[in-house]
Image 1 (tube, rainbow, N blue to C red):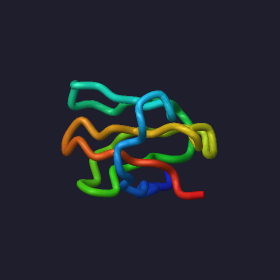
Image 2: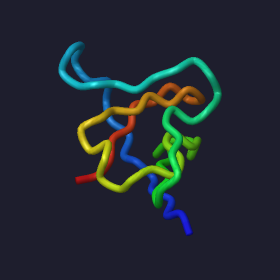
Image 3: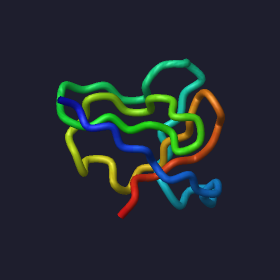
Image 4: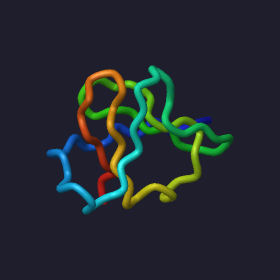
Amino acid sequence: MTKKVKLNVISPPAEGSRIIFATHDKDSLVKGIELETYTCGNCEFVLAENIIPNTYNDIVFRCPSCKSYNEIAN
């Protein structure tokens, strides 16, 4: 069973300071076949679906639905 993880909403990072996954499509930014699904901390949109845990710890996800910036809690 896939574990859902609600990400932390953060302020927009300084340009060039972090890797940001973003898209204009209303679809998950990352799709896999593993154990965790990450949702936006603001609107619960699925940002990364069925991925390997702890793979995207340094990545910021920009939600295509509400435009908030999200990161995985440390």
